[in-house]
Image (cartoon, rainbow, N blue to C red; front, side):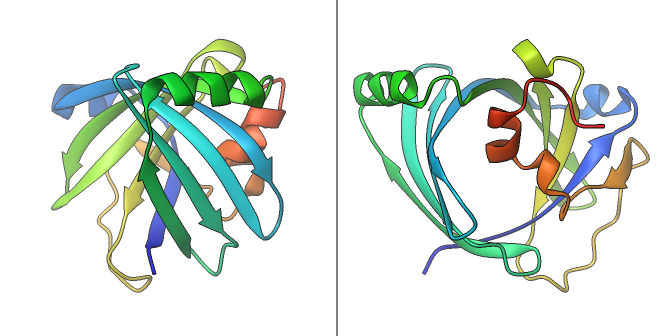
Length: 155
């Protein structure tokens, strides 16, 4: 079974930018989302597309399955997902032996910047960069499926 274990934080400064090694534009739409499962379609710089199924959150982990699909299919699925589509630029930032993903949101969520780090297990010790602030891992308002349904930045 595929498993995703991650922690998520609000970003408090632009200090991460100096260490960023690359970025990509993501468009992701939510075809279905409830307490048990989420079905998401994502395009990356409009050159790669994946369909993702995520299970219910248990602690900071959940089942996750990803399948590459044709970009043309993803564009059609994104149309079906409207208005539950978000856009963000994801930056990769190495820190403390891990790769942090810093998401700078666009559109109706402009101004929101979140950092996520994927872990090997829930007990893994993480050295936090000084540019992260409040942890929002278990605050549902900051999960992407919830953001896709919100008209503004949570707060």
